[in-house]
Image 1 (cartoon, rainbow, N blue to C red):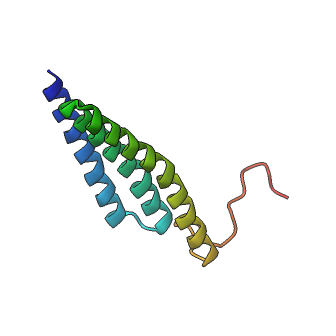
Image 2: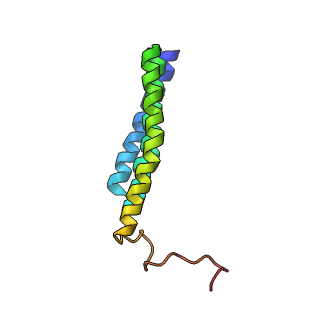
Length: 110
């Protein structure tokens, strides 16, 4: 039973990782691509690591999987923030915004 659950988790992780790769190729700007790479890629990698940890059930392997997952959870948001900040600083306008100004919410005009 554990093998079946591990296989399902690895398969789901692979699907999420493939969706992240497709998102990187198909999304229109750097900000959306960054979101696909960090959010969905981390989820897919996490599912694969949980599946590997369940399958092998060796304390050394489980510890490595946990450490890799913690490393991904710590570095992925920081990397996404730095990529987004660098893109904004060099002047890349987010997709769907005609001007470089941020959109104004309704009812909050000056």
